[in-house]
Length: 518
Image 1 (cartoon, helix red, strand yellow):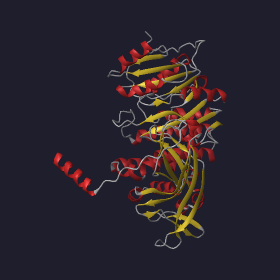
Image 2 (cartoon, helix red, strand yellow; image 1 turned 90 degrees about the vertical axis):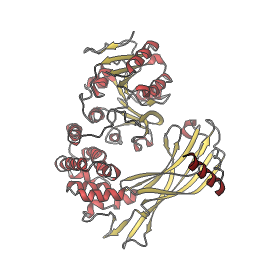
Image 3 (spheres, one colour; image 1 turned 135 degrees about the vertical axis):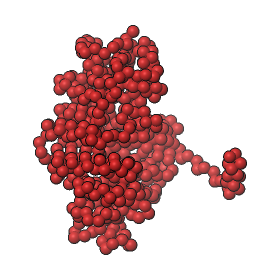
Image 4 (spheres, rainbow, N blue to C red; image 1 turned 30 degrees about the vertical axis):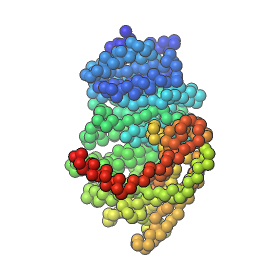
């Protein structure tokens, strides 16, 4: 029996060490763990070349018996049973100590891998001699760092790639690197334990790779909120933990542009986002007020002026209002922002054999009105529905020049998305009923997809085109009509047949049947 109990001493490295150790903390996942198990059993990397270490954190459901059964059937699966620690950190740390692999990958018990993920991650790591490999993530009900996965990136650092956008631990780490720097997860019931571990690893690593041409890891938010961190956070403790991540950045960097850019990640993702749009409006008012107090304290006491100054104008405005405690204006801005959306039109669509060509135009709306800028004193200012904002905070001159629209292909079956090479331009179009100097930005992009070579030939499924508009702090998606279906890898696209029109008589009959059945 390979099931073992936790001990303090580390496992001696074996001469036949596997290439990868997959470490999985598990707590009452029930049937949700089956997708992970199935994906590990399907890996293209031979079973003798990797091991799976599942650390059962005192589960009270059927998980312990299921894991013991799995370990008995498959020699490369190992199970460690421990008393409940209440958080993933201790199981992950035990996994590091037990691991024998050259590399370690941390997975969650309800996520899953692409079939070739481990083989591709290991090949990338060894070819480029990297301490860390970030494999492309696909989000299912949760966000992933999409811009990071725009392209493959080999031998990069925090200084020259947007690695800081990826703060979860679902990555491949060289085990000797973890041991040499005593990299461990902070234990106990706390938040942002991933951030503390990952930001220190990024700062210590000399070579990091981003593998973006294959969907390696599927990251899920369960509908039953079963993830251990799914409950609403307690602001004081949360931002105390966030300050620990900032402390690590300060320890390894000097004051200046790099430190500001790294700090900006937490301002943008963990502070501004909670005081904006639906997240703010849907939260209890007392909770929002507590978050605003914590954010104001960090902005005024921890961040250099360049941190907020480097944000896009929409986010600079939120930071400005938060810094001054203007909760009412933050709420007004959040209400307006919930109406901001991308609108796009498919202007041209040609399908010839394997090749699809499209031209798309798009812009941002708030409700039924365009997101508007006003040219004043040689600057382009973002028009927002709150008074008395420092014009420097809404100065969009630089961002207007950078605004663009990407086109992406999204596969319905797997939720993976791929950036398409585009030719794009942006035009300033006047807003006739707006204030003097008012204009909106209209984007036009063209792309051609050869489904004979697209995605390295992995094309089977239904592909939907999406337009993604990047504009002054917003990144908004809109799906385009007329998806294509690829019956099998390498075959030509098929345009799904349009649904048959339903006559008025059929609609009336259907409605009557529905009423009668009630």
